Image 1 (tube, helix red, strand yellow):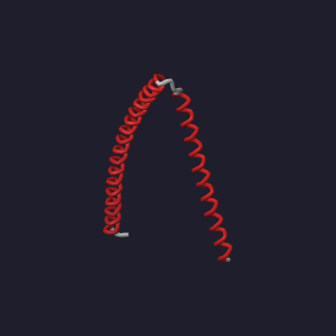
Image 2 (tube, rainbow, N blue to C red):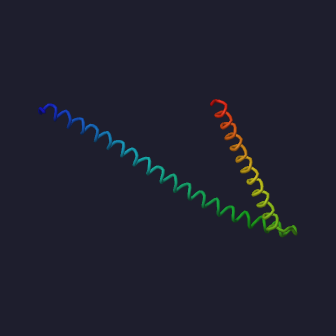
Image 3 (cartoon, one colour):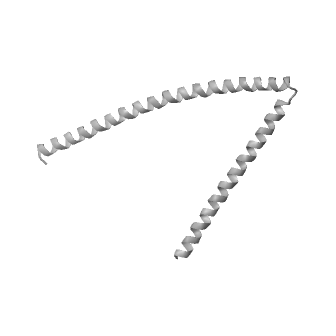
Length: 111
């Protein structure tokens, strides 16, 4: 193996290393950016959670002023929401089952 061949290989390795280094730097910048966005999102969620707690307390006070059971209203709403989610989940399972059955029927027909 000649000196020219070795120099070419070293040059090639050097170029690859430089390209990889640039990629690592880009990834590092992206990670830092994502971390900053995540921190901002966390702060926003905390702020919104605090605001929701305040609003809930306010709504319960208003309901109490009007002789309404605010806790019962919230419990009923939570039950309605859970039932709706269960129905949507059941519909998704039924749809998946139907698609699976259709695929099985197509496979059987193709064979």
